[in-house]
Amino acid sequence: MTDLTHGNGALGPSGNSSGETLEELREQVDQLNNQLVELLSRRGELVAQIGRIKSSEGGTKFYDPKREEDQLRLVRQANKGPFTDAAVSAIFKEIFKASLDLEETREQRKLLVSRKKHPEDTVLTIGDVSIGGQEPPVLIAGPCAVESEKQMDSAAQLVAELGGKILRGGAYKPRTSPYGFQGMGVDGLKLGRQVADRYGLQFMTEVMDTRDVEVVSEYADILQIGARNMHNFSLLREVGAVRKPALLKRGLSATMEEWLYAAEYILSGGNEDVIMCERGIRTFEKWTRNTLDLSAVALVKQESHLPVVVDVTHAAGRRDLLLPLAKAALAVGADGIHVEVHPQPATAMSDNEQQLDFAEFREFVAGLNI
Ligand code: PEP
Ligand code: MN
Image 1 (cartoon, rainbow, N blue to C red):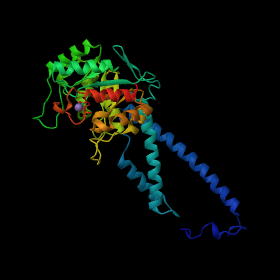
Image 2 (tube, helix red, strand yellow):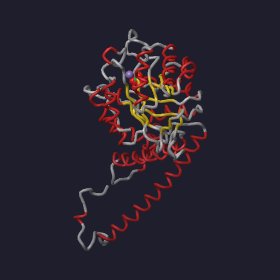
Image 3 (cartoon, rainbow, N blue to C red):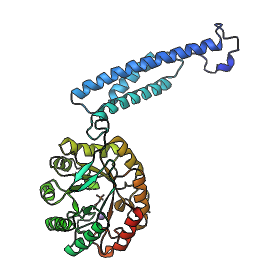
Image 4 (cartoon, rainbow, N blue to C red):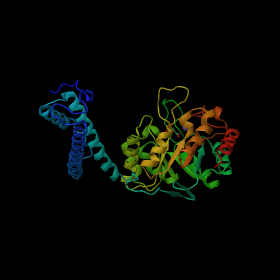
C-alpha cells in the first residue's frame, strides 16, 4: 500500500520520484475521472436493463440486499489498495444507492399518479365545481359529523353564502373509542345529500368500510378516505372501482411514497378522480394535534398531477392556527382548503376543540380571501 501520509505537499514543483510534474499527475487523475464516469454510465445502463427485465417479470422491488452483499464481497476481494476495504465498500454503497434511485425513477415514471406519466395538472369537475390546475382554490367546509337536520341546514346555508362549494359531514365516524359517537350512518348520508342539494353544494362524506362504498356512492358526490384508512388497501381498491371522485387523506404517519401509492391503488382501479388531502402528520409536538406538512403539499404538486387540498382543522387541532395555516397552504400551491364549521362547536358530537363557530368561520373566510 502507498504511504497515505504523502500528500501533494511532498511533491516538489519539479515532480516526484518518477520525474512527473504536479500538472502531469493531475492530468492523469482527470483522465481517470473521465474513465470512471464512463464506466459508471455503462454500469448504469446495465442496471437499467436489469430493472427492465425485473419489471417485465412483474417485479416492483429493486432493492436486493443479498445481491449487494455478494457484490461488496467481490469488490473487497478485488481491492489491492491503497484504499481500505471499508472505503471501497462505502464508495460502492453510494453507487448501489444511485443505481437504485435510477431504477425507482423509472418505476415512478410509470405510476399513474406521477407527473412523469401525466405532465399536465388534472382538473376535476364535480358538478359545477372545478378543482386543480389554474382553477381558483375551492373551499370545502361543514361539520365534523352529520348530527341533525337543523345543524346541517344552518351550516350548509352559511357555507354556500360564503362561497364554499363542497359541504362535508361524516355519517360514519372513525372514533378512537368504540363508545364515542359513531355517526348516523345511512340517515346521515340522506341528510347530507338533501341539505347539499338545498344550497347547491356538492356533498363529501367519509367511507370507512368496503361494505359501505356502494351506499355512500349513492348519496355522496365525493368519497372521503380518512387518514386512518389510507393504508386500507381493500377500501382503496373498492373506491378505485366506482366512478365517484375520492378525497384521499394522508395517513397519520404515511410517507409521501405511501400516500402516492395509496392514490395509485385508486387510479389503477380505473377511478382517475382523486384529490390528495394533507391533514397533518403525527410528530413529537404536543401543542398542535398534528403537524401540518407543507412540504408535502409542494412535493405532491411537483411529483403528481392530482389536485391537493389542505385540511387545516385536523392538522392544527386548535382554532387560532387555522387562518395562518390556510394562508400558508395556498401560498405553497394548495388547490383547496378544508375546514370544519359547526353551529355550536362546544356541544358537537366530535372534534369540539377545533370546529369553528359561525362567527369564526365568517372571519376565517374573510381572512382567506378566496
Ligand atoms: C374527518 O375529516 O372527519 C376526519 C376524521 O379526518 P382524518 O381522517 O383526517 O382524521
Ligand atoms: Mn373532524
